[in-house]
Image 1: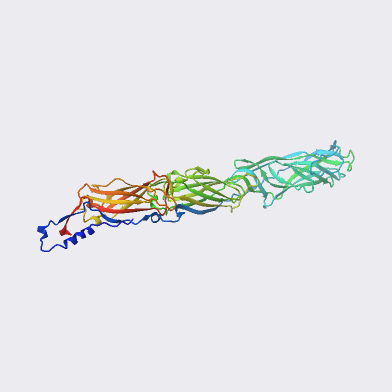
Image 2 (image 1 turned 180 degrees about the vertical axis):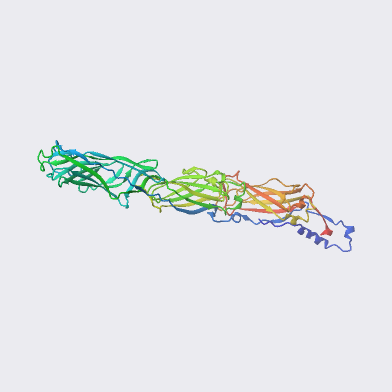
Length: 586
């Protein structure tokens, strides 16, 4: 703010002109009193300030812009980071071991074979049957990655990454050499419910029903021995038991049903009390199997954060004691989820001072849910339900040096078995676009601005030893909708406070009304600033005036700062008691 300087030299010039017109024959030292009084009630206009518009006081920068004629703090950017890969798991001990067992044939009492939908049964007349029921227990105990907290489904492959092909083979031996064949008709292979599998039903000799496979196979015998294989593709496990971070499978594989011989192949007494030896075994394509995908609750490691610098905001908004309560702070987030499952995320927004400390202990926590394989957009304001803690608008109550935005948690929460995360995959990229938008509109605003007027001593040195009292008359035209409170403190040339000068403690400047559109409201305030000497020669020490201007909208809770708002100060000075000047010194 550039004030026109008031010095005594201009006023003294009037008297120099006057004395130059006096006849030289007169002895001024004897006939005329050479002392005159200047000042008194004489008020001298000393100009006015330029029109100080907010557009000059508040410059646009990286985060502060003028949008639709209003100041807006706005910042848009992007955060993009890979989610850390989760280690793949190898299972070494999946295949159960069946012990061979022996069963006895007896004459059959059934008239026809059982009928199972979708299964073609042999057209034979049954003569003998042998029950081949058996079960085999198996256990798997494999540690899972620590990121896996709960499991809906697990996808597995063989050790080469291909679908896990298995074969349940049933070996038959010990039959009479004359017997050409026997029949597995309606035999049920029972797998644990936890195993997800499929069989080829195209030949109608295998039918899957729930966790069972029904078998209709003819076993051709050579020298009393033969075998049959049932191919099964195993895809993984559903709702397996997870205990202490490990996958626990403890279950049984069962074989139920009868093996039959028909009347056309043998006589009625040929198989009475004959035994059959049965040896099932489960063969894997590779000795090891791999867990490649998991659906459930997974919390991968993430390190996603960014900072928004507010360094270019106006200084008067950062003064100590400034308190702002913006009407709203809009935060727009667009989050792209690279995983097929929904992600629950937590964002943390913290205002930091120049030392990196959180201001006012106000950390805002957001809880967001992003649909799988989609980009979800969130429009967040002060009343949004996604805010778990902290105050969004209070982020700027004290202007921080920067605002930190951090993703503190990414939790994958599968809702279906197909929503899986692939283990050992390192290119899952979480992409976050953000946009912060804060109009400088305030419900409550309290600011402080500090400045110093310097080198007053050189301007007033001609009169400060001759007066005890100086007045500055100000007319302040204020178009900013903020009440101002001005206080002044005197300092000497060394920057030390001066005692013995009386100044007003506070000067109030009225606020303009908040205006909309092209309208402009101006409030004029008449102010008298009196500097009065109470200690001898105190005025002669005066060199600096430290000014603090405080602003508050306590009587107007609807404040918008705009570039066309302004303050103009009109100044005039007077010496109320006058100053005795000796013309011989002029």
